[in-house]
Length: 337
Image 1: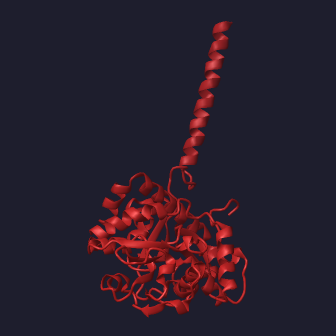
Image 2 (image 1 turned 180 degrees about the horizontal axis):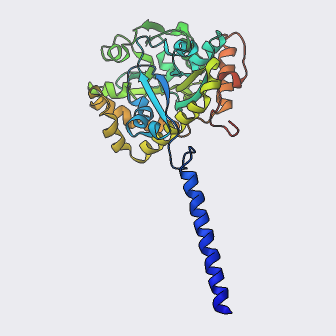
Image 3 (image 1 turned 120 degrees about the vertical axis):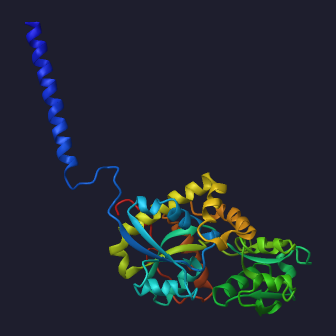
């Protein structure tokens, strides 16, 4: 009797196994992707803010390491002929994503441009006021009566005025000098005593290459609210359709950022192979200085940061009206998307 019972149990067990195998085979033969398969490939275009440089590290590494491809994305990376054009191209629907700057975003939205922030690349200000270390300028108030070079007006002038006010000075206490984008040459030649709009990950390395030590005044320590420097912007008219792809893009950027943090020197070796022009000592130093600035959670949104900077600009009359943070920015990877 026991042998008969054992035989029946074995027969039942074999039937269960065979049935499960048949169902698994049916599933594998269907059109449904397996859990390990990549999503169907989709295209996204990204317009950078300028030529490729170490500030763009996670974008380039995501491309070089295949992180975009693994998430089913084919990303076309472009550089602009005009640095002011990328947000306008996104607003017009001619590009899917563009790199921009949080301070400019507030002005662009105030002017009616249909764009919003969908991710962050550089999560701290890069902007500094730079002077030569061998000058007599040791604190911000020492700028009184000095020549200060700048590249563009607008927000840059507002930030400089706020820093001066923080030290009890005003714009009338300095001599502004338009040096276009030749910030480092103007400082090296002593055409100016200081430059505003310098980037803390580049200008110090450029000065050092010429044997000159720089001294940086960090704007967030001089009365300016903290903000995101480099951000990804998308057009509000097309974001609804593109949001799932943008969410994938941000996951790839996060993966690349973490890889860079874990492998900084290997990251540089891979980054510099993207273009031969990148392989120089200034870019190597800029790469090292940029790593601590990359957003570890690119999609995550600090609403207080955008609200505070909006109030900062409104109080100074730079924008005409306050808009809700959700009009300025969103987290495309938020739960429920």
